[in-house]
Amino acid sequence: MKTEAKKLPKSQVEIIVELAVEELNPYLEKAAIKISEEIKIDGFRPGKAPYDVIKQKVGEMAILQEATDDIISQTYLGALKENNLNTVGQPQIALDKIAPGNPFIYKATVSLLPTVKIGDYSQLRLKRKKINIESEQVNKVVGDIVKMRAKEKLVERAAQVGDRLEVDFEVLIDKVAIEHGNQKKYPITIGEGRFIPGFEEQLVGLKANEEKFFELKFPENYYQKNLAGKNAEFKVKCLAVFEVELPEVNDSFAQEISAGSFKNLAELTENIKKNLEQEEKYKQEQRLELEILEKLVELSDFEEIPEALIHNEIHKMLHELEDSISQQGFKFNDYLQSINKTAEDLEKEFAPQAEQRVKTAIISREIYQEQKMEVRPDEVEKEIEGLLKNYAGNPEAKKQLESETYKDYLKNILGNRKVLEYLKGKIVVEE
Image (cartoon, rainbow, N blue to C red; front, top):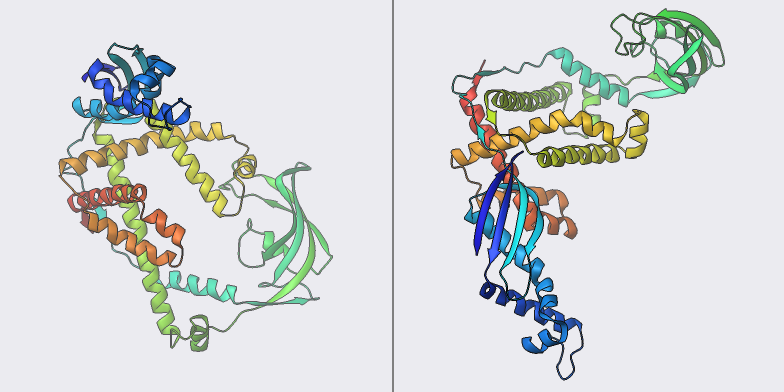
């Protein structure tokens, strides 16, 4: 087999592959057997007719055409290896010469994995901050748990601070209702401060079926810039008032919500503090890893990134978003309508982030190889064992987790993890 590789613009390469006539024989014989299994040849059982008989029956060109896919699939990877090429995506195949008694020649055009010259990060330093959980953070979590355990009672009296109300309301600016400013049976607890300043205070004193009209000004720094600093008229109708009874926060409360795991309130708050510390540590590591990769991208020089790589990453990001929306119980098309965008709009928006993700993946691969890192089979198996504990009694999940495809995926994940730990060891210092 002869091969030749020609570099093309935009990080592509054209590979010309030529097989001599005698190199084609094994492929032709295999193709002939397949043909004889599919057509009837008098005097022979399916798949048992000699090659010459099959050639006489269907013609050598038909056998060659049947063998084409097998020839290409069996020789393409060898051509990549022979020319030491790292490619991405599927190749575009063009047949140059296919005729009985002649060499078989085809061209494969494919994107190359871009090379990168990683910048000097030896002097790069990032600080890992000491995690300090304040009592206010713990109290907030306790408060959220208390609210989840609250009991409500429908009352006929006027609303007070702490009550939960169901209201219909409408917001108008210059006598015109704003977008999404009309809500029905909206739940609101007076005193939580979830609305613009002054709104909840206006609800104090309302009884069921009473209406109230008032004006308020949106804060200057309101997140919706088209409303910031503007005066608005609010029309509110109270539908129901619920008195909220909160449980007392004491040792009994701690025992009840933990099913006896904690003996007293002190143990509960200590456990909450530890969980918050772990959560903050995880978030900080995520931020450090992201900042490290961003700085390495800035320091490094890349060959031109193939469009195919960015396109594939964009679609991966779209699938990730679609899965996230689906897990929340929503349809992706409904989500797109809610934000008034199309999938094509998101693809354009995702392009810069997709290119950044591609570049960080290229850097990670380069460092993995440069540092001669390795993910051992036992490391992959250990990871799978941990995952299988979450799918006990699910044979289909077990089959997928133990598949070679998933093992390759895990190997890549573990390899990236090793790269990030290596970089943090070189770059991150304790505060």
